[in-house]
Image (cartoon, rainbow, N blue to C red; front, side, top):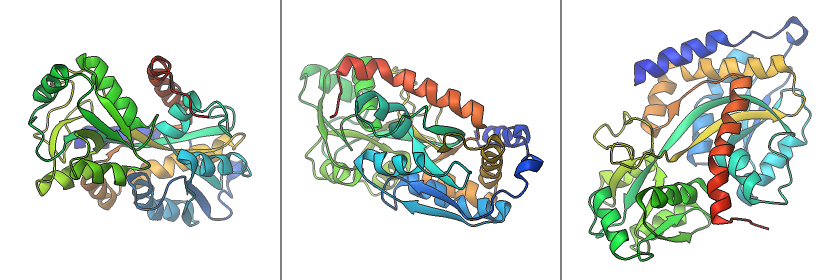
Length: 322
């Protein structure tokens, strides 16, 4: 998988156009990437790993700013209103630009109209973990428990409409079972509840799941990526276990609408280059984050497809947050 990813990144970087002469001076000042969540999470780390190499290529510092609030809406709205000159970017994910527009009728930004796509640079697969002491050491055993007692198996997430919530609902529907959702205000309190035995299962990022399983605190039942991942080569995918769904998130960069095309292409190019730096490749493997590199138009299609993937489930669950 590593060699395939590297070839894909090389090809993607080669396909990205260089800045036009009209934008030869770009960037003229530091490029600021707003992360609309608190520091220290996987989204934050995924871009901080790349920022030094990106800045070296651009000839200007790449500055990461955390601006959390309202499930990512505060920081995202701020970038939507920034000057569209390429110097202000938002770190986007499935929640900010695919799911939030479906569940928040009064979202303070339009996920399509207010942004210019730049790149999707990483996927973050989830793993399904069960709490200590739960008598389910396999996905098959978990499904059997849930089928025997509908609504009795509980699962945590970091909020209603989060990727962790919707991924578990996809799994429940695929397996034909009912489980009880227990939402928390973040992944940290949700994980604490799992470790304390207050909830039975949850989806978490693969890196966090591997760390927790390494010391025996939880048991990993499956990984939500299309193929097995290097960090957990012995853990089967959900599809291998008969549940053909994917569970995870993605991370990308977008700018304000009317951002120059050449600036977007330049940012996409240096992001792809940063992903190929050997130290960054190694750090991504340790984080169980899978690099990818899309150009602006491919990014537009990727986000649209992700939104279309989640829309039927959001409608079926009738999720609306005022």
